[in-house]
Image 1 (tube, rainbow, N blue to C red):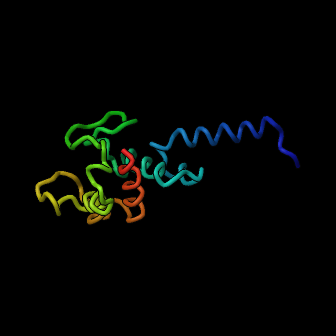
Image 2 (tube, rainbow, N blue to C red; image 1 turned 180 degrees about the vertical axis):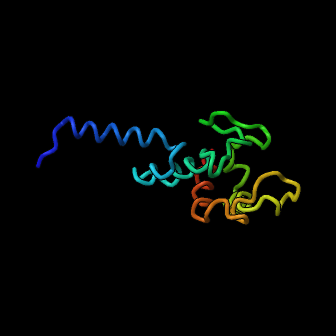
Image 3 (cartoon, rainbow, N blue to C red; image 1 turned 120 degrees about the vertical axis):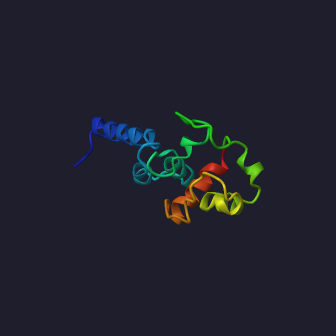
Length: 124
């Protein structure tokens, strides 16, 4: 059975909607075959997951916080990506008085999710 032009356009439109909602639905990013950076963005911007925007200003963010530093020039600030990952995994190792949640230590995010967030944040 051949697909009609309208069903092909409908499928393309659905895919566009899925990709446009990455900040809300990380599972849509996976279903659409999004890159690791896009998946990391979806996790970081998700208010029930990374929730980075609650404290940090970031490009493309909405309702950003200002408690933490702006996430800009991250590759310059963290030349070794392992240090950025360690900061996200448990910021209390560098600053015991930080209010940043230890995303790895308390299993707020999985190791895979942390890796994806690192890839995204590193592009900022």
